[in-house]
Length: 121
Image 1 (cartoon, one colour):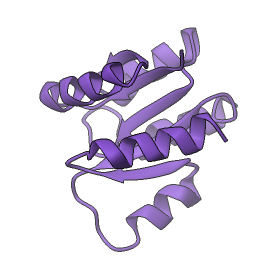
Image 2 (cartoon, one colour; image 1 turned 135 degrees about the vertical axis):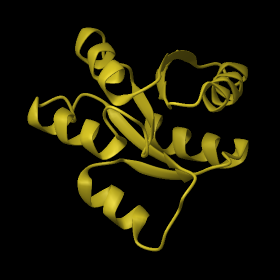
Image 3 (tube, rainbow, N blue to C red; image 1 turned 180 degrees about the horizontal axis):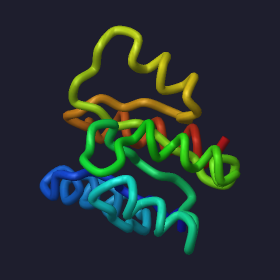
């Protein structure tokens, strides 16, 4: 069963995504910021990280940079989550090292498609 780390500073967002993922059969861990996620990834890398781009302490882009610098980006897939989708954001996320990009509010069908594509290539 794939393990997914949901990283978002909003508890309601984490809970919603957790319920979607658990109902689809995934094991879910949570982090409320990039620093917390980095600790979890270093201790026990999940199969995939769903990562909010805008968070306090360390945002999504900062975490991806840290993962790349620590050679952890090749061990974990990272999908960006954002509520403020601007033109060019998805391209920037992919260039920075994200494996995928999902806009909020998260739709179950889109989430399943991205996870299926990434976890079962």
